[in-house]
Amino acid sequence: MKKIGNLEIENPFILAPMEAVNCASFRLLCKRRGAGLVFTDMIDADIFMKSVIENGEKSTLLKYVNPQQDERPLCIQIGGGKIETLVETCKIISKHCDMIDFNIGCPLGYMLGKKGGVYLMKHPNMLEKIVRELRSNISLPFSVKMRSGWDEGNVNALEIALMLEKLGVDAITIHGRTRKQMYRERADWVLARKIKDSVSIPVILSGDVTNTYMANRAFQHTKCDFLMIARGAMNNPSIFTYLNDDFQKVELEKPENTYMKVKKDVCRDFEEFLKLYREREVRYKFGELQDHALWSVRESKNVSLLKQEILKAKKEEELIRIVNKSLF
Image (tube, rainbow, N blue to C red; front, side, top):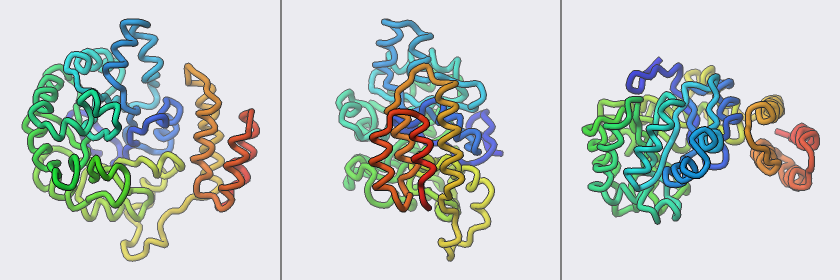
């Protein structure tokens, strides 16, 4: 068991923040499958505080977080570029989570336009001012998630990591791609190792860990303390079970022996997600259920046919029937 600040985390596998994926029911499913820590998707502090003013704190929390006691420990991720709204958001959410993460790796235009996300890596003086203020207002464990830099000519994650440690941040997540790379190309694990060797606080690796073989390699090559699972969990929540049980048994020379998706996991996970969605969500969007069904069958041999059927489906029972037709 490792710690981030004073927060004990049962195992080193963390559910990454994923926009339009990490609803409460999906977070809870991943927790049940063995995630040591689950993240919300990123909350835009400006939008969050606007909603608080218009709709009240309770309604806003339900809409943007919907925290569940049995998913904890829970990390809420925030983003933005205005100190005032970031601090006020932290004051509200800190009562409903165990850790707060500040995203300075978001490459999307809307966040860059408000001088947030990876824009802040390009402007370290502005970043330092914001993080210093957040740290002084957050009593919970506080982490920062970043990219390698703005572009190939501005890879400054190591320098940023050293600055964050001095500012009192409890952990750093490194996604080893630049803003320009978005989610293409391989994540830079060499950079992650340099950061791990240079700071004394925990380092979380994000990028390219999609199975037990890659988890084993990631720990061996980067020596990071935790691994953040994104796409590997989006279409396969049971990956956490296999990571916890098997990653240390995998031989680095034999990637073919690693865990692969199997139908029983896909069907069980999707049906349990549906049940949780009915029981825990404060909203109901059938399109969201269709999205999760599509992700579930993404690696199926008959994915083209299943995709067409999922998009035409009108009822939950149809989605279950279609997912059960998947072939792996």
